[in-house]
Image (tube, rainbow, N blue to C red; front, side):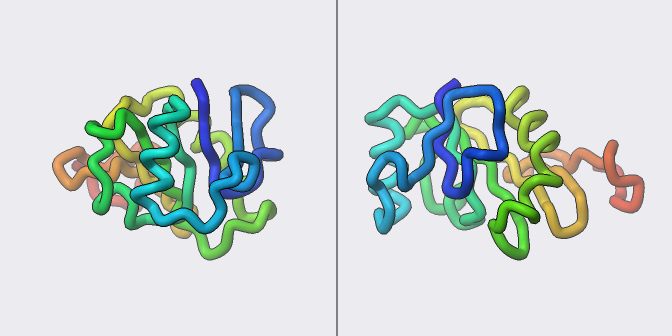
Length: 127
């Protein structure tokens, strides 16, 4: 799996990770960034930009997105999400997005039609 990440790739030990900076794509608007990802055959984009799933046609772009809802993308805030990011990468499919809520420790799919996964957070209502 080839993965583009908007933050630090130092979080991960396994996989082929490139940052937006590595690719020379800093400053690109989301549409161009996602098309560049497709052209370079990236499978997944990990980002804190929660607008991408609503703005981009992920199926057409043949991409998947993991959105991190975090206060900041500083390494210290992201370290606690690594296991959940890896779990999302294991189950994500092309054309979909998964939102990892680092603010209240919940993991949920981006699609409003897909039920929220409450297994890790008993405080959330089921389904």
